[in-house]
Image 1 (cartoon, rainbow, N blue to C red):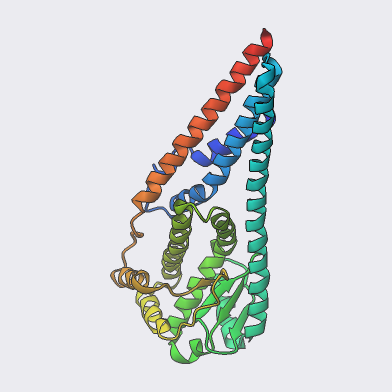
Image 2 (cartoon, one colour; image 1 turned 90 degrees about the horizontal axis):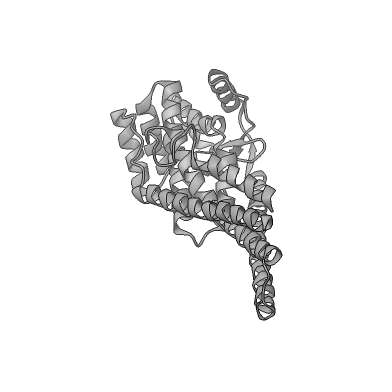
Length: 323
């Protein structure tokens, strides 16, 4: 059990800090720092439960091996070990179920995509190819909705697909079209689609943890803000993007619930805040949620306590084995 414990400790330390910093000591104007905080909050429950189960199993196994245990305690130890194994099996099955659910969502997404879309017009494909060249990235496959759908969405895991609405060409001027396409290409350049699937799987595995749900929501929101910023850096037209957001809002048709797509528009106050930021050309991202920073501190303290107890148990077992 020593090797898994050391491996778990290494992973924990890697998640707890980056270049000597803790998850809440970053500059929150940095999108990568905020993304690391959200991923830490999503993976921390799995890491904490795994560390706790490993250390409990190791401690009881070491106690049984190195110490003379009274006969009347053996039955209690056997019951405890059986319960611990069932608990570990439950955590493993729960995580596998979340992974299977994410896989089923991915299959449903591809089925829905190919059923409701067709090959995009040549003009749209040409515009996407030119923007992709400017952004120094590979041109993704481009499709168009058969009916009036969302203005543009990015979906997929291994090779993301950009899907646009037919009215994107007729209702938006060229500058607004360019802003919309640049926003979606920014999702692909940032690998938001892959990260989103991982975050969705972790959120489903620990859906009963409020911090996990909130971190997932904030991660998705930050992706939209960061892609707005990158689209403006490419097009140099923040007002065109703001205008496109306003126009697209009236045409938006939401995808089926449960499918992971990166759409161009937000909802409600989030959309209003994005438009205000673009009109003011304010580079500051939305304020980091204090409750997420507090949750990161709590997780870090719990992980430190669990790993500290595991280290003490390892030292104690080594001392007992010498006697």
